[in-house]
Length: 344
Image 1 (tube, helix red, strand yellow):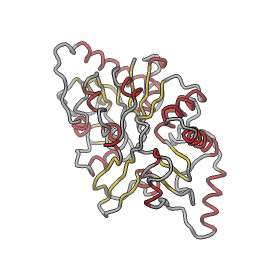
Image 2: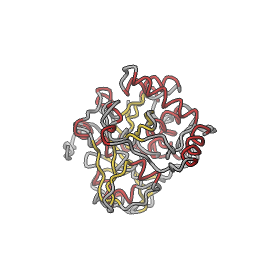
Image 3: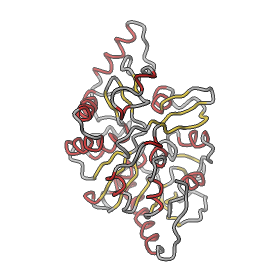
Image 4: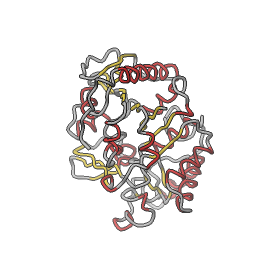
């Protein structure tokens, strides 16, 4: 058994090749839900759905978002209606009282659908409607996602990190507080970051299914340490579980150069070095790392090297096999290795 921690696109790309290394039936994927939003009453789970759609063979692999070939008629009409009456297409948060009303899972991340600032495809919307309706019928988020995983014939076990609400909020140097989706989708990551908050994390819990999955060896793909992994690590007991199991992480950097996404700006914003060294400092529980051949970083933990760029399934398999070697090396040295310390 092996468990992947997934956020953004890094780990989903790695999963393309992982199925050639580990049996998907013995693979669990714990997905970040800090990026989730409720948009027009429908719960959108971007990091969950990237794994769902990729595993179901329908992901748009040009954008790594949504369903390939999907139409966007509803989205286009929402924007037309808003522009027609001068309401605009910027993110529209619901009021403070509404942020903690209604579905508890949607706390601190409720948006109006007026102008719909995130592009949602028509088939994609059906997934959000189904998930939200299952929640309204009384199912937990874990149960609702299990239903969707069955609908997409997913081979791996897909688990949300928690059934409780956690919202990733970006505090900017200008004094604004933005949900991550406004920061990244609407603002294109432009406001300078002063800090990142995982609101609700202290009162949330990883599910029993997640804790069971974390008892197996864990692979962290080349994901953003701040907003992809940060919400998981902020959950009580999550990091402690990682300290008690073998963990290998793939750096999303080559030295101080990031492959893609906002990881460098976010790490710098929260006071971490935007580099492989900063990633290692962010993961004190990790026993081993997979680094790119060209990465000059030296670490105090076991390192496997390969070409870590992932542009397809063959690349993903190459990186997955490096992860497999790293886990084997950790297992070989486990008798002599002391438990790795780290903050809760």
